Length: 258
Ligand SMILES: NC(=O)c1ccc[n+]([C@@H]2O[C@H](COP(=O)([O-])OP(=O)(O)OC[C@H]3O[C@@H](n4cnc5c(N)ncnc54)[C@H](OP(=O)(O)O)[C@@H]3O)[C@@H](O)[C@H]2O)c1
Image (cartoon, rainbow, N blue to C red):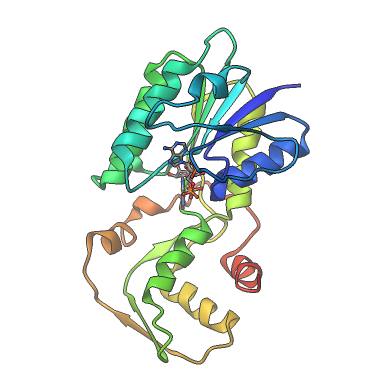
């Protein structure tokens, strides 16, 4: 049986990775910095911290494979950069034969600070000499929903920025791609992957209101921000490689009902 350490195994993506690894009968260890983290039955939980370099030797000790999903966009210097270096330093190179990392498409084409962090982490992994695979995907549906909700004041009008688009992917399907990679030989940087549909944000907002059976007026405005511009550019889509069956509408019908 292969043993896999999943960092970020308590997070949105990591939880799905853990469930899918269990379903193929891999041994799973999760590293968590939370005091009261819970993991599914059969999973070994190691309390530790990437940033403060706690518990990493214990967490990596039996790992044939590491799937690195941990990240903290609010503290990238400590968690993503220093934390990944701590993790790489802790690895027993005779034991761990594959390091799998989740990144974001086109991180190399943007000056956005979080993307600069992702590219730096990719480079650290490549320079470590540990055999690796890096998967770059588009945004998850949940992430787009969280953006949409920031505009939803529930006052009868939903006003959103104009010109944005997404090719978001269901997190379970992104997890499937990562777990598939983890089972294979290391391949380095994998071709990018986008979700099944390329949609205007306006269409996504209409579907959101429709699924919620709301009659709010939808207003599209020329709002300015670097973030909106990022989602107006070609950098958040990957039309040449779309993957997955879970459409935006199917995701909303499931997520908003639960
Ligand atoms: N969201 C998207 O649309 C998207 C798209 C493409 C790629 N990605 C990438 O996918 C990855 C996972 O994203 P997500 O949305 O699943 O994130 P998430 O739900 O915020 O989970 C982040 C995880 O990081 C762990 N973590 C944070 N600080 C830590 C520390 N100091 N030590 C150990 N673990 C720590 C957390 O575990 P504890 O709190 O238990 O410590 C948590 O499980 C990220 O690398 C992200 O860049 C995300």
